[in-house]
Image (cartoon, rainbow, N blue to C red; front, side):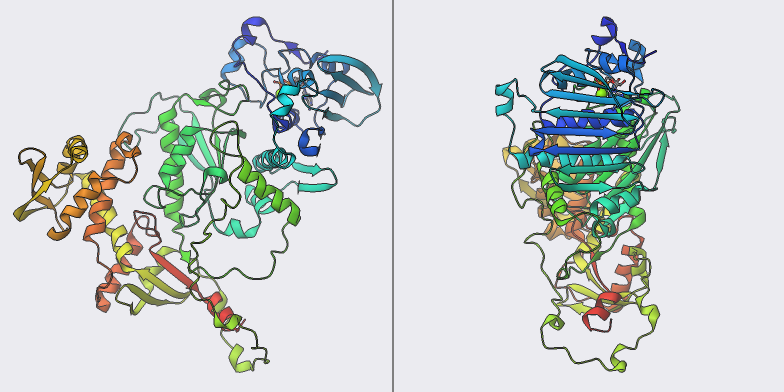
Length: 635
Ligand code: ADP
Ligand code: MG
């Protein structure tokens, strides 16, 4: 008795309709999802000519009997759904029963499959949607689908395919991403004679991240661990009661980059819901919101986020290619993801290292060839854009820090000619010097400030190396959190001005001012209209030097980006706090006594997010002991 059924019309009609097969990567996606749904532990993918000539996906999953193998090519034939109600809680990757017939209609397709409890396998050959031949074959249990000459019968569609390299890049990106979602499975991707990706089963996501991206990136990442929140949580951040106390638990796992690790676009953000690769504005927004005031607004993190929840909490039947979802409790999901990432960043308190020139030796031990690295880089560039159709990015766009690396500490030791054998006295140092203390911003409370460079940067010695602190941005971070906290607790301190500050506003500023006047007042300003478009500032939050008040106000009234006008109130509060902190913070070119430097370091260590200023610049840099020893050629 076969498992596949044809969906009754009333169910079929409820399924998001549309084009499934757009390009070779969509074929790979559908076949890969079928293999995963079939419980495969190993998936092998082979492509030729960027997938135009061949896409072949072979798995060791449950396979199909002869009847099912034929039925699978009927529209709306699926083993994964029975009735309309099942659409409300989909736990498989596929459910529409449309992929195989859609692909078979536009290619020459061969399906070879054998269910474990059947003595023989079945081969079905289809071309342009017509079944040409069905035969019995000897085969190990599992399924292999080969799709040749995609769009051979649709010249118009064929014309829209992009270059072989681009199509291949999309495929490589897709397979890479699925391999991240299923670390317990093997994946391989071969293009003609070359292996682009080959990963064996590993126990932890961390190990898979290592297999795919290598150790250098892994070091830059913060592990979220497993973070959970149940829907019945008494109230969220805004004090709103939860939408419905269903008790459903949401779980978030994954990795995010430290705030100072910055990418120029969204290409390195990978989002999964119930292990389904998706593109979702809500989750994207939640992630970026977590970095607000930690990283500059125009850069993006690396992120690999896996959200898990009850299938009934998420509607995957929204988009024909199943890449978009809709959450039942979207505000809850947004806040949970944002808070979870922010908490993880706060706990990790990562410290920026003083950027050193990259070591000259090639990276070794990466489990994929140089070619595959190139292909994957290409893939990440080409895919993951926010909108469909996906277009490749400009070459070179994806080089973090390109042109920004100031390259201090370019060690003179790199010069040639220092090849004399080192006497023992130059080497000897207690081995514990090499033990990396847990690098945390908490350490800065223990540092000994030695002095300032140009009355602007504090130099401090710690057991784990040399630290540099930007006194202005460090103080800015401290004050930003202080202003924000006071505002949230309604305890702002106000200070009257001896003479009111009279400000003439442009019409645009006037409009913005009216919109935010109430919030300015709550932040500690006392402002009155002074006729026309002029306002009189009579009092201001304590701590802002009167000479800087005008600048602070104009900064709030004249934001660089246009988006803030539609941003939530919380963003406005942050903007105001950031503008005030910037004006009230210790300036550069200010001599500081030791006691004041010590105070600054302690206060920074106590901050919630001490690692960067509200505009996203790092507050401190560390030159680790190991690097010092290395530069002095002691190791
Ligand atoms: P859907 O995945 O939405 O059910 P498809 O057209 O992709 O629709 O596949 C139709 C059916 O064929 C699936 O429901 C499944 O029963 C069967 N099938 C497809 N691919 C495989 C596979 N690799 N292994 C086992 N069964 C498969
Ligand atoms: Mg499918």
